[in-house]
Length: 89
Image 1 (cartoon, one colour):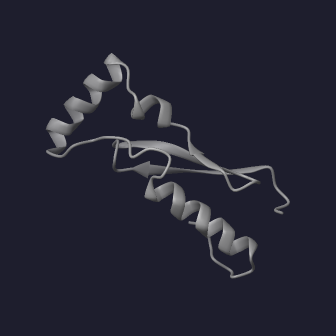
Image 2 (image 1 turned 180 degrees about the horizontal axis):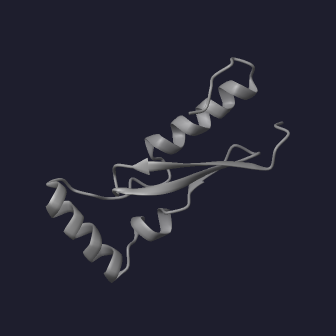
C-alpha cells in the first residue's frame, strides 16, 4: 500500500483543448477533475467545444475515465512506487 492519500498533476489535454488535473488515490483509483465538465457538457461548455473544434479543425471530446492520460499517469506512479525509478513529468 502506498504511503500517500492522493497525488495529482495538471496537464494540457488535447482532447478538450484545456488544462485538466488528474488525481490518483492510494487505492489506485484515478479521475480527471474535468470529466464532469467535458464528458457530459452543459450547453455553454458544448458550445465552447464546438467553437474550438471548428477553429482547430478536429473534434474535441472527453474520452472518459479510461483516458490514456489517466492510465499513463497512474502507471508512472505505480512504477515509481515499485522502485522502478520512473520519473513523473
